[in-house]
Image 1: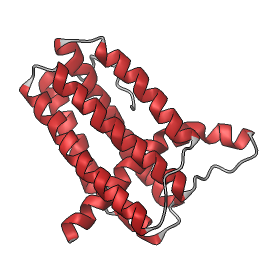
Image 2: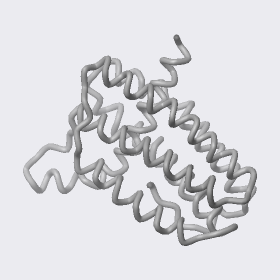
Image 3: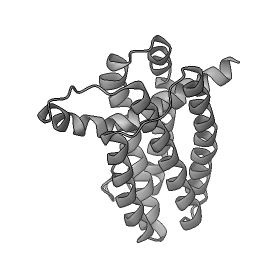
Image 4: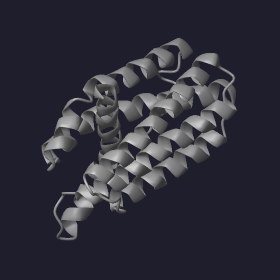
Length: 196
């Protein structure tokens, strides 16, 4: 049961953080329209759902396009982890009686993901591998930053806040793996990297 709880913790933090990289950019829009910079629990679940699917879809594209065994293994790990995480997020949403709702953040995530996917689809070989891994490094660094700076301070539900606080080791592990691949590919300066 602790493993399942830890998986849910990791899923929530990873996916909330992904959303909040977009949330931080949307903050000024919210203020200018008279709204607060807060996001509701249902909107957070919507962001989580969108971000999780984006990671799965990007990894599936990597599996189709890469010829590099290390990149294939990383992409497969992302698919496996995020498929499990998606299930855990859905279970936690049901437990908390929270249904996903769209938000400016989830829309922003989908728009950014579409642009990155288009860019990745136009690349092949080492150029693809470099862009994909650079994107994953940038993405996971933003996840860690957002978790500490935005998610934990804004979490209203105590269980959610606890889940976010417990997720740092999982997030750091994903970042470290992506950085190791980046180094082995020699691509740390070869691509722009952007949050999907």
